[in-house]
Image: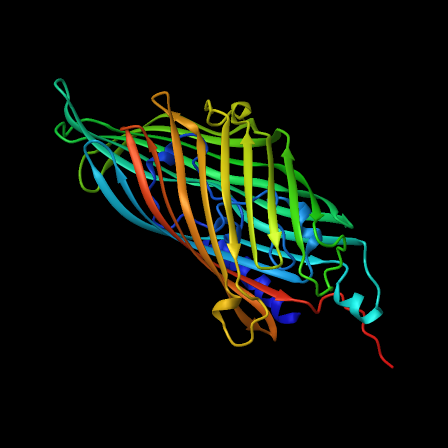
Amino acid sequence: MLRILHTVLFTSILSLMLMAQGDLNSPFSRFGIGDLNDRGFMHLRQMGGLLSSYQDNYHLNFENPASLAFLSATAFDVGLEMQYAQLEDPENMSNQWSGNLSYIGFGFPLRNPVNQVFSNERYDFNWGMGFAITPVSTIAYEITKEDELPEIGRFNRSFTGEGGFYKAIWGNALRYKQFSGGLNLGMLFGKDSYTRNVDFIDEISAYDNAFTRSYTARGFYWDAGVMYNLYLNNTSTDNTSRYEPKYFTFGLTAKSNTGFSTESDVSDINFLVATSTNVIVDTLNFSSGIKGNGVMPGELGFGMTYHHKNKFAIGVDYKRVFWSNYENDANPESLDNTSRFALGGYYRPDYNSINSFFSRIYYRFGFFMEQDPRQIENKSIDNYGLNLGFGLPFTWQRKISHMNLGVSLGKRSIDDILSETYVKMTLGFTFNDSDWFIKRKYN
């Protein structure tokens, strides 16, 4: 238990240092609140994103907090990702690598199923709890374009932006027999900065311009979910029993509009480099501490997953986000409602195999297609991709845990204006420990 606590503490500190966008340069992130990050932990992403209805006894799913009540062991999850992307417009093409720490999560059952074995009793009621830090969106772009006007000659326009939104989550879930309900509470926070420069090339005595807008945001966050397991070969929900169940999991998630507050700084500056050591600055506008408000949109999701005898699972997921309700005084944008569809699952030949390591692996697969809330030149951004992944078991503190290794091939595009083809390589570790909250008995 102490080791996992030390790991949680170390990774929490590391996440605050590393939860940045690396070398990402995405022109898409100039619009809206930036690029929306993939939702769900790595094992979910590798199945296309079964966010509403997937649950098992050893992995975390904060996208539907009701899943926490089905945990049979403490789970600590950390994820990293690396991306290779090719950006292309009608005139240019560029390639880039980027990487980041994606999230950290920690969950545990407050009624340890191991106690059922010791006391020879079955629990119809269970309580699960968890904590997580995960990004919501990322802003990271640097765009430069040379232009020319007859009256002033050549000049460069440059646009840069950095920042993003994050959320810290505290989740709780209660389960009674086959039914569970959960609630995530937490904080939404972030800092975004946008800079626009005009640098004159031919006019030596011309003033260059720098326009900067930045703001911090913070607010309350919540979402809720329910799950129901429909067993086909046994009505038991006893996680300690040895039978291999066949069942459907139905899931529903919901969130209403939630508000946040902003504080903005604005600066518009002209500057002239007269000599190598002399810079003449003319401040046109400078304002700080401008208060504002915003609204994050509500959403609704539902899904269904079929589990067959601990051997394979397959499910579908649909989510609708009402981005037309989004508001932000610090950076007004008009966004569109979006939909996301996912299909995926896993196959595991024989999780009890002693002789074959490959039979104990989760072989995951998935497909997704989604819309983006942003529009460019009144045209929507479409995103779709394929996912493959492997859940590789290993022993940690004499407990079975998993390394979740995956790859995602995808493309997002706006007709013939701009397209991005990408390959994402994902790596997650799920550490399990069943010794928490055990009632010790001595004879």
